[in-house]
Amino acid sequence: MTPVREKKMKRFFNIYDANSSGTIQKGDFEKPVQAGAAFLGLAPDSNEYSEMYEWSMGFWEFLCQNLNKNDNDLITTSEFLNAMDALATDKTSLNKIIMGHANFTLKLWDRDNDGMMSQEEFIAAHTAYNVNPDSAHEAFGHLDRNGDSQLSYEEIIQAIDEYFTSDDPEAIGNWFILDN
Image 1 (cartoon, rainbow, N blue to C red):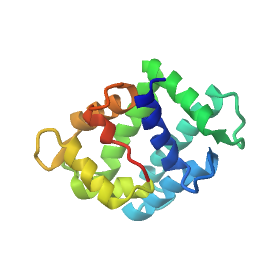
Image 2 (image 1 turned 120 degrees about the horizontal axis):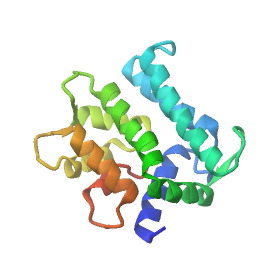
Image 3 (image 1 turned 45 degrees about the horizontal axis):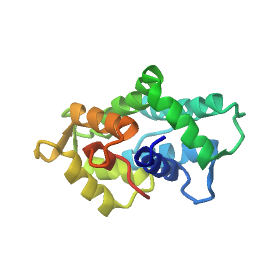
């Protein structure tokens, strides 16, 4: 893994390692779902909550399978980096896990159902993952490639792809996941 991608994947790890323990566990994948659902007003028995939970647990299961871990095991930063390096080179799994996340993220956080993610919606989504709202505001400005004050599905997909696969330190997609 290049230094650029390693830095980004450590940021990604840190959104789950909210207590800065240096490890993540299954519960760390449940907390953002609960925070997002609370913000969105989703009941635990709603279809949207179930979809969000299933994606998050699917990502946790991918990590466990890739690392030969059990469901209750801890995953260290270095193990996470190894799994993410493997994911970046496996386009099928990348599309299933990461791009699948983009699909439901836009669907869930697009509260006005216009097919776009507003700045307010983007900040709310990132805040659920322990990101500072000011950082999310700054990131949105970079990710809004056409300056229309919204992120289209295409802008989100491009940002996610760049975040997980690009070694370019200037790639706009590097702003998609921020330090918490």
